Amino acid sequence: MNTTLPNTARWARFWGVAGPVFGVSWLWAPTLAWATTDPPGWQIALVAAGIAAFAALFLYVTMTARPVAGPVLAMLAIAVTLTLAADPVFAWLFVWAGSAAGARLEGPNNLKAVLGITALAAATLALTDEGDAFWGVTAAVFATSALWLLIGGLLRANAALRDARAELAEMAVAEERLRFARDLHDLLGHDLSLIALKAELARRLLPTRQDDAAAELEQIRDLTRTALTQVREAVGGYRQPTLPSELAGARVALEAAGIELRVDAPDEPLDPDVESVLAWAVREGATNAIRHSGARHAEITLRRGVLEIADDGPGAPPPDPGGNGLTGLRERAQAVGGTVEAGAGPGGGFRLVVRVPPA
Image (cartoon, rainbow, N blue to C red; front, side, top):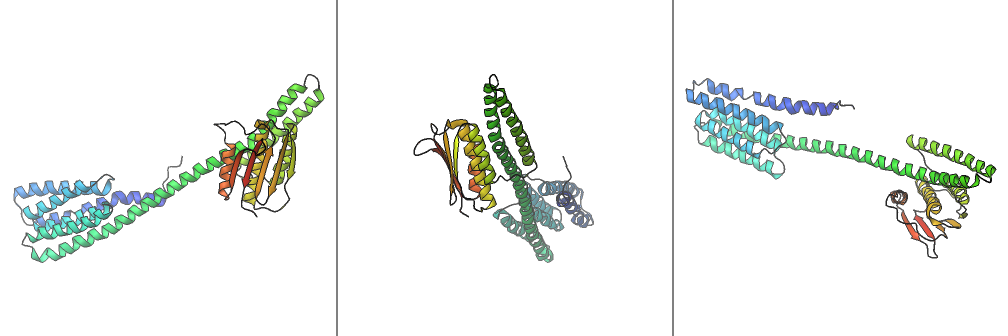
């Protein structure tokens, strides 16, 4: 399995670590400015513990995917405490707290947090004697927090876009698997039913009519090769059945099963997707007639986008919980705007009707 990340994902992971580390490293600036004032010992202990806790909380908020409201409040408490108890220069810690909150809090909470943190910074500075720094620090807190609010929104939008792309890719893989399973069922169901029918016929003919049994075995061989070819084509990713080929195949299969077939389908151009749906319908109808109907006569009629396959058997086939043929046919018809009806016919027997948009 290839574990190499795309360039954008690698850069996102790198900056998801490098960005917070670079940001927290700038805590040295207010700390150094405070240290030059020759603080007393109790302030040194308070500031050392406060800055260490603040840095840890900042890294937690900016690097985790867990809820961050509590850690942000703790950062604000440290900023207020150091600003009032140690030095007004620590009011700059509100810039870090506002940036982290703006980047991480989602929805209407992030704007409220930015405004609240700005107001708290202004109120804290108002309690100090640093009137000259009031407007500068307050403006810096608001501007930086608002900037990271926008950046956080962009980062979340990009993450949601990556998740959506990954989900679409998974859905495409699942849809392709479903298509392949459906096609493989429809390809093999018809041929294997016919092979089983001819094998049973050959077994009955073998004791008394060996030449006829040998002919049936040769047909089984040819059908097996054809089925193998079809499987290879399906695995190769492309096989679009055509209506004339499926009508011809249905005639051979039904007549081999002792069912007389009458076809009334004009030779007219059809959209390739629509023709594919009708071709699969012919194959499914013939398969059901062979497997379930016990019929002696069958009829296929195509008129103005309506394909009808009917037989004179005892009626609709018994429910098959594991059956996929009609389900796959309905999915194909729906893909081109068509519908499928299957059940007992008005005069008895089994009837399959597929309606598709006319050409």
